[in-house]
Length: 448
Figure (cartoon, rainbow, N blue to C red):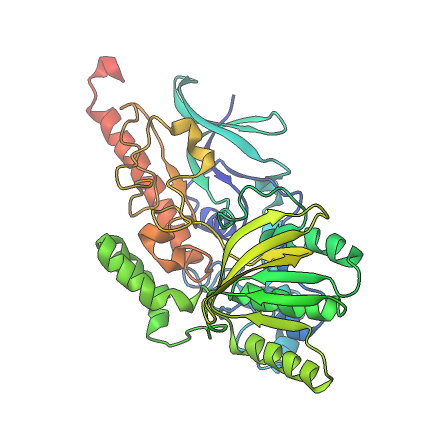
């Protein structure tokens, strides 16, 4: 039985950055990643294939890639990806501050493919526990849906956040209600079969909502698209350099040390640097599309402003009936849609609306978890603090990219701090090993 030093669950951007750091640091010898997907892909459900306009960009300058902030001389930089794929000068010639999303997706895939010997694809981990007596010591035990078993001293969970499905839709089982994370695979088959004039509701006012509306309008010109949002209009993304300092490494320290009240105050100020807002290019294209339609006497896209969804039910014809409260008019009306797309983002570990106290993958540690604050207790090095764990547990479980409520906005959907965080995680793993060595050295000879 082999006990790995480190096993990473998931191989998205956060854990790809960790793989780079593990290789370049040489801190651990035996490490492996388990990924549920069959191939490396990033945001495949939101990579549109109809026009350059709808591609948009990654909302992140290329220097904040998987490695540059930590090691600008690395061969895994976005710049080196361009060089090795003969794209450098054509890319520079476009004079774009931020890369196209398909270009960045290929960069991530290019990096991931260089770790094929360290990744097992098609392995979804469904059980994570700790065994105290394994090969003379304890280790974390991972079981995949394929029946394979793995053991590791440390585990790094980088599975990404779970989709945020509003309570009104949580119990609905229908292919007519689709979260943005399943947009490409599930919307296409349904939308293609809908007759002319069918009505599609897109819920939300984020960048994803804007891009989905554009994609629907261009791909399915006979559909009627209804944008339902609680706000008055699509907010513009906050690109202020002062607000964007929330993506500096030192901000993580500030945020982690702050009280819940101060964190809430910070979140309120900086939320639109990454959430619930759109880039200007997407807003301008969407507005131009609506204006163009008006010139030609049609209204394919309709905005429902200041509107809450009170309830949602599946109708006899397979559609979705929404009870909509329009706060501008003070009316509550029932409306029928043939398809509903939820551009409602993701859930964090926390105590806020839509947050989760923990993640399903940690169910095997339910008796160990400290939820006294309402959610998992996570230390500065991203390790879960198991308050009730046995004293002889060696190694840690680390959350990579799941700690926004404790470490700040750079730890969620943003790629800005993945490189820095990977170095901090390795340091945390080494700290755990050093503490274990000290305990072993201090133990009487008969107990070693």
